[in-house]
Amino acid sequence: MKKRMGTFTSILMSAMILTACGGDSTAGSGDSSNALTLYSGVSEDAEKEAIEEVAQAFEDETGISIDINFPGTGYEDQMRVRMASNDLPDLFDTHGWAINRYGEYVADLSNMDWVEHFDPAMAPILKDEDGKVYAFPINQAKDGIMYNATLLEEYGIELPTTVDEWVDAMETVKEKGNGEVTPLWIPGSNQYTIAQILDQLSTPLLVTADSHNYESELLDGSVDWSTYTALPEFLKELQEKELLNTDVLTASEAQRIELMAQNKIAFTFAGGAFGPAVTELNPDIQVGAVPVPAFWEGDEPSWIGGERNTFAVFKDSKNVEEAKQFIEFLAQPKNAKKLAEATSLPAGVTSVETENYYSEFYDKWAHVEIQPYFDRVYLPSGMWDVYAITGQELLSGTKTAEQVSEEMQSEYLRLRNQ
Image (cartoon, rainbow, N blue to C red; front, side, top):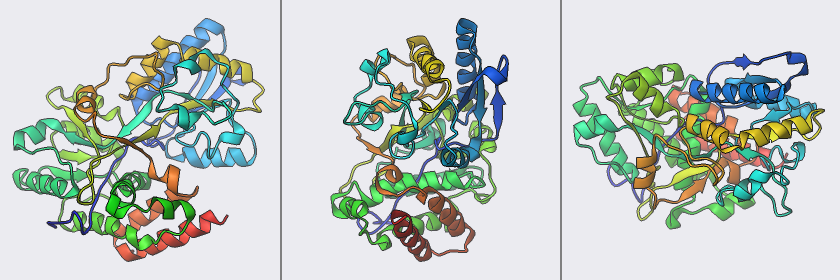
C-alpha cells in the first residue's frame, strides 16, 4: 500500500449529494389544488424543515401556498420523466445541472434584485454569457471527507493530505479501535453514495495532478479509461484490508448519524447537515471536514464544489410570477440565511453571512482550491448511474477493477454519441 503516490491511489465523499437521498416526503399547506408545486433534492431533516418553514412564512405573508415534495433517491428519475413531457414543477432544484441539463426549461431570473449579490464563484455556474440567470443558489458545495474530529484527536492522528496518509490514518483507526470503529463507513444500499465517492475521487485521479492530467482528453472524448482503473482498485483494496464497513452494500444512511455519535465511525462521505445532527445527538462528538486528499505525488488536496441546492422556475409554468415572487422571498437575507445554515454550507449570495458548523475547518483549509464536480464538467448525462452500478458491482465482487474501467469506457462513448 505504501508509495501509492506516483504509482496509484485515491478516495471518496457523499453528501449530499446532492444529487439527493433519503426517503419520500411531501409537505404542503392550504388548498393544494391552487398551490405552487416545489420539488427539492435535499435529503436531511434539518434541510427539509427549513424549506417547509420558509414556505409557510411565504404563505402567511402572501396567501400563496406551496405543495412541497422531497422525492429522495427518486428525484432525478422523476425530473427526467417530467422533462420528457415538458411538465416540470413550478419550482425545482437543479442540483448541479442548472445550465447543462435544465437550461432550456427554466425562466430567466436576471431581473431580480438578489442577482447583484451573486458570489463570484457561483456566477459562472448559474449565469451564461448572455446574462441569463438560471436559478437561485441556496448554498454552495464545498465537499471533502467528513471525519470524527474527537476520535482522531484521541488517537493522535494527523489529518491526511495524500491518499497514502489517509490509508495510514485508517489503519491506525483499525488498530486502536479494536474492531469497534469502522475506518471508512459507506452506506452502499443507496448506490448513489458510492457514485458520489467515485466522482469526487476522479478529480485528483484524472485532473489536478500535472503528471496525470487528462482534462483535454476527457473533454474531447479521447480519454483512455484504463487510467481510471487505479480508483476501483483502490476502493477494492480498502475493502480487502477491512477498512470499510462489512455491511457496505446493505448499510443505510439512516444508521450513519447514530453510529458516528457512538464513536463507531472515523471517516465517511456525507452532506453538510450530518455534523450538526451528530453533535445534537452526542455533544461530545465534533465532526470535521477535510479536503479530498491528493492521489499522485506532487499534487495538493482539493475541495470539490459548485452548485449544490437551488430553486429554478419552470418557464412554461402557469404561475411564473408567483414562483418568482417566492424566490425573491427566499433571497431575503433572513430566509437565505436560514436555508444555508440548515445545510451547514456557505450561502450562494454575498449579502448573507452564515454561522457554519464547519467554519473552523473551512478556515483551516482556506488555501485549498475548489474544483468542480467531475461529472458535471467531463462526463455526458447518464454517467452518474454508471458510477453507481459499477461501484456496487465492484464491492459485491461481480466486476473486477479492469471490468469497471471497461464499462466506464463503453458507456462514456455511448452516452457522448447520443
